[in-house]
Image (cartoon, rainbow, N blue to C red; front, side, top):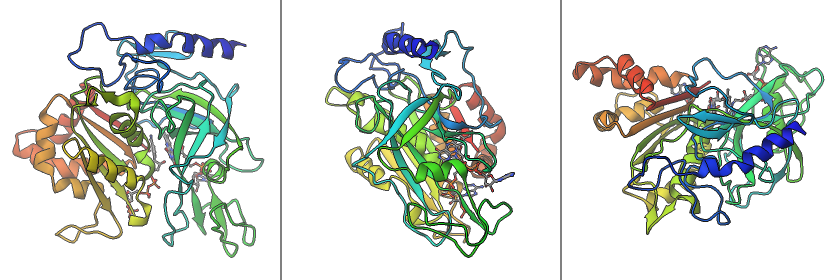
Length: 404
Ligand SMILES: Cc1cc2nc3c(=O)[nH]c(=O)nc-3n(C[C@H](O)[C@H](O)[C@H](O)COP(=O)(O)OP(=O)(O)OC[C@H]3O[C@@H](n4cnc5c(N)ncnc54)[C@H](O)[C@@H]3O)c2cc1C
Ligand SMILES: NC(=O)c1ccc[n+]([C@@H]2O[C@H](COP(=O)([O-])OP(=O)(O)OC[C@H]3O[C@@H](n4cnc5c(N)ncnc54)[C@H](OP(=O)(O)O)[C@@H]3O)[C@@H](O)[C@H]2O)c1
């Protein structure tokens, strides 16, 4: 009952999320924007709650990494958190009382996004759940995907997943949430939950019956789901990765692997959804620049969408990727995201001097030191120390990091 009341309160209070900010803005706000037509596609540019990024906990909810700073204010009322003066949905559903949703078909993306590469963990999926409008969230948040705990499978805990859909969801009815999940499969490694002869083909047909295998508990559960399957959802949560409200902001996105999830959420809002449409164009007026790092070209995620945005908005969207095991730079170094960014170091440095520029980083922790490698020399040339510059950007809420 309490849970239902909390959800009701949040949904009832949804106008608060949609209310225009006190100071009149010259252009529609990038997030927290008023929504002109309630019945059209859902919330405004920044989604249902009009606030940035959070995490949806699907049953297996892990603690947020220490590297994730949360500058949100204390929770004021159940199911809501106030961030920079605006309410966002917050932990509407707990592990003890999760929301029970269903996996639904996604016409645009078949479940598996990647192609076999020869690696055991080649598969990354895009899975969409129906939440019936009961789990509002905004771009940049996460949820927990809750699997019924399997006896004997360790470690048993909730796992968080960054939401890969914008607030209105992939089909823009504000009733679905999508995730981008990599299947964890380790062969003859330190841990095993299948002895030799026990591993059976997964939904993609991959199996290692000759080996000892560790299959990640939650990721395999999600990757093996089919439409109609029930799923337990917790959250949403997360306030580190929220989009700025300024429609003229520049958004630099750095993603390794499934770290693309929040970036996809932003890009749907900025360049795809009806909720982000402005007079004769888009509400978003800045530059969005995505750097994506993957091991193989067959592991590129949402490449079709990125190419389409580039074609439709060539002055507003730039897209570069680093394919670590196929590309090298001129010095023969492995192509990591920071190696690719180094090719544009001057341009990126200039962009970061603009107080309208925000940097979003999601994925592997190693990216942070990669940034130091990339921008250390140029910062020094300008009489600055990169770590200090990055710290100042974080303080100004312009450097958003969620790495794991
Ligand atoms: C904020 C946040 C957002 C995230 N977003 C995403 C996302 O969008 N997409 C995504 O795919 N992932 C995401 N993750 C990671 C996700 O939460 C899970 O960690 C991941 O899916 C693996 O979970 P699993 O249950 O499949 O693996 P687990 O079963 O938890 O196994 C994980 C690791 O534990 C090791 N292990 C096994 N047994 C032991 C033991 N006894 N002791 C120690 N280690 C052991 C295994 O070798 C394996 O490498 C996110 C994480 C965070 C914190
Ligand atoms: N919100 C969050 O916190 C969040 C959200 C989503 C995902 N994640 C985490 O992000 C990670 C993504 O992993 P994945 O398996 O999806 O990715 P992946 O497909 O393996 O791709 C990762 C890429 O990054 C490269 N890489 C390795 N070390 C690097 C470094 N120090 N700097 C820059 N690039 C580096 C890899 O290169 P090589 O392998 O060739 O060395 C590879 O090309 C997972 O750990 C996931 O849990 C976190």
